[in-house]
Image (cartoon, rainbow, N blue to C red):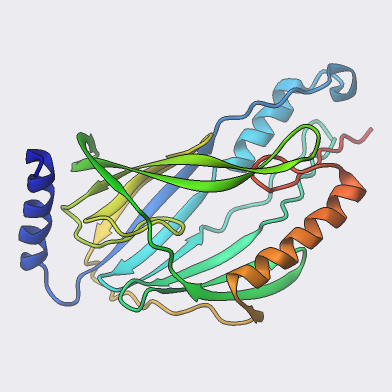
Length: 265
């Protein structure tokens, strides 16, 4: 076995044995996304920089992951609505607005509350097995020593001719065995330590703050409310809605999230 891999598991199990049964934590994550969008200067009215700043801010969000050894709840931190630009409003419609994501690592299941165009759904399904490849490379994130792991998965891609194909996407994770919970942001888990950084395509999710065993006990509750569906049923409903939106407003981007920018007078 690779020496670095041995160190990972030794650090994981040594730390794990020292942790009390009621081990809990709160991790704060920040998201960033590189934008490759061209704005017509004749339509933007000289506000290209302001519009790009607004779009960048739209994709910079904060998420909170509360966790223990078996369960977690991942949700976006509440924030104010984006301001207008020079009296003209930039409107962004996101098809895939998601609410709270509950994961039970022990039972290998999840519950995700998702708002789709004003209608609430409660997605209940089994967690996917992520086929991580441990790379052994290390770097520090804050005071934590993190190890690199990669994952390849199939995702949908939409061409300029609106042809839907599948392509392989590489996900890179940096996790720390110093926090021995097999969890992380979004639906990424299964590594010997908490994931502190994730990146795929143009998006990066980075942990900016961690609080372990806070003085006030954490209560992790499953989200409730909404039409109960499986993931495949929700995907089918979403595909139908996306096609309806596409015919009305235009085609989707490659991530499956459609958005539109309107500039008023």
